[in-house]
Length: 143
Image 1 (cartoon, helix red, strand yellow):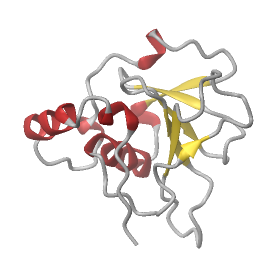
Image 2 (cartoon, helix red, strand yellow; image 1 turned 180 degrees about the vertical axis):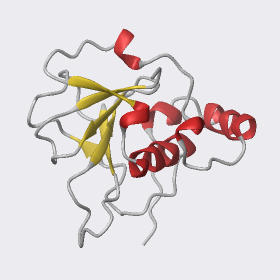
Image 3 (cartoon, helix red, strand yellow; image 1 turned 45 degrees about the vertical axis):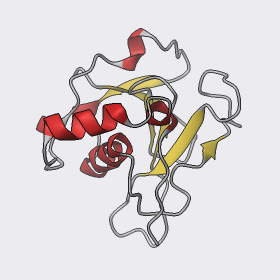
Image 4 (cartoon, one colour; image 1 turned 135 degrees about the horizontal axis):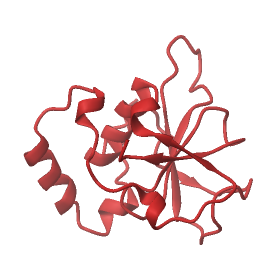
């Protein structure tokens, strides 16, 4: 089943940014060259308990997930886009509904697997976890 949830960072803009980005960017091939050129969110997000990771170092499936988030979907799993409660309290403390989670497909996994992108409300405030919320890495889109 395909489920579409509009990420909060675009809902606030009425989707105008997503439409403009899609028109300017054209088709996305899923390669590192399609990476957004925006400055990394790390400049405005203070996260001491989480490392960071270069966009180019993420698995290709994470690139696909981030592209889907930027486009507003559609997403492959019904739970994609649900509120992430930050129960582990590794990410900066925010009000309920600030974070949302999206599945990063794991080839060969019989389930959704353990990889996720967690988004915050700031533009490209994306965190990658490969171990189902044990560790998070802020995605640096500048490398």
